[in-house]
Length: 145
Length: 64
Image 1 (cartoon, one colour):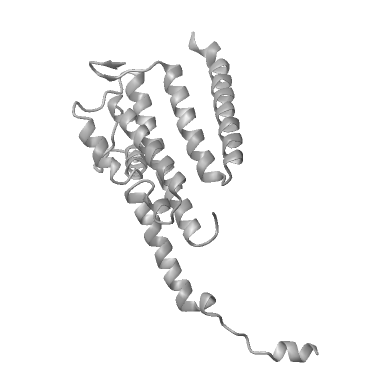
Image 2 (cartoon, rainbow over the protein chains, first blue to last red):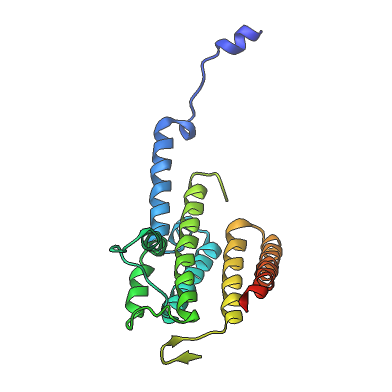
């Protein structure tokens, strides 16, 4: 009896075929990148409208507030490791990074507490969007819902 | 309030805004059912306030 069970060939269903897995993985990557480029898009593509709206509004509000508080929007030509880290965090906001740079016409002013808070708001927006993009990627892979 | 040199908020207002936005985002990303989301948002917001105010008071002796 045990031999009969072990000798049965394993049937591969279309949903579990290797080709389907590769397609799903590629789609998940595309959704993750889309979610990074435009906050909330990764969830919107999966019809998670509530999450998409909240991510878009949360990241947008943090970016607009941070930029209008004259926080530091880091650039790629930073002088030290902290500038590079800040740049990576700011870049996490995707296309909102350009919006932040456009909003901050007078440049950063971190000599006051407001500017310092603004810098944190901008970095938090980027990290939050990266987290949301990762969540969208995992949801597309079927690991989270 | 928009000041000449940008958008100005008090420390506490910035703290409240930060806590509220992050709590709502975490609630929506971390939980699925509306009831669970509300509970998570409120709990997360409360913890942000408690930890933030706690750290502020812990640093108070060093501010002078």
